[in-house]
Image 1 (cartoon, rainbow, N blue to C red):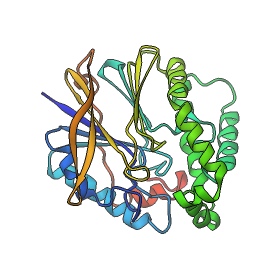
Image 2 (cartoon, rainbow, N blue to C red; image 1 turned 135 degrees about the vertical axis):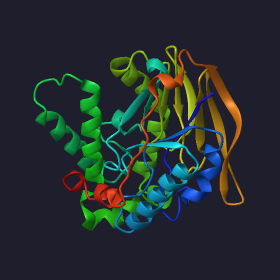
Image 3 (cartoon, rainbow, N blue to C red; image 1 turned 30 degrees about the vertical axis):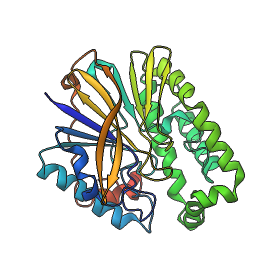
Image 4 (spheres, rainbow, N blue to C red; image 1 turned 60 degrees about the vertical axis):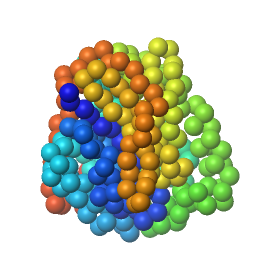
Length: 297
């Protein structure tokens, strides 16, 4: 029986508020055939963390290759050009996977750069002119480019990154309010997005908000896999040929492992029907990704 594991928001390369090192994650994919990282794999946007992020991402690829596990990386708002993959549809379209930055016009409404990001997104949408044939693909692409706006201004990056920390939120009460409001509204926002762009979805997997949870909306299940940073309650989603399971991630002795399933449901179709392609990263891919679309290989 094949199995796919889905994680998100590792934030590799950041010394705090991350999964730390790729080696610490290795026990998580024991017994699975494929590993999908649903965005924010590494901090390739940040000049201070870029080198470590690239090293850890390549180490992740190396470990998966050694273990015979296919690795697929979806891009998030912290690594918008690490991969061209922005979403996956598995199990005959029943399972929809995307990072979640596409759901909000400002990508991250709690960010000090939220206004700049929103403007970049609006400009990108306007540049498309007539309604695109594939609205979902267009929105995902626009969000990918808008996310890069958060990190494009390197002169302000250090102060803004500090402002995005827990302490920074406490110093900016509006950001804390925006975060809590978005956490509360997230399941309904996600459900409306799916109804419009992927109505066949029965199970939707997101990350991005760092707020783990499982919600039922209008006959579909919305799952957020949380984060390895604050508040630090990550979930793992495991797909077999017959089931989708949500498992708590535990940390012991510096390594992460999967705990018991906290939720499960039968799948309507085998995952193997839409197996994701393995990741292929060159030694320079992470550095190129951090430089934006103009420098992509």
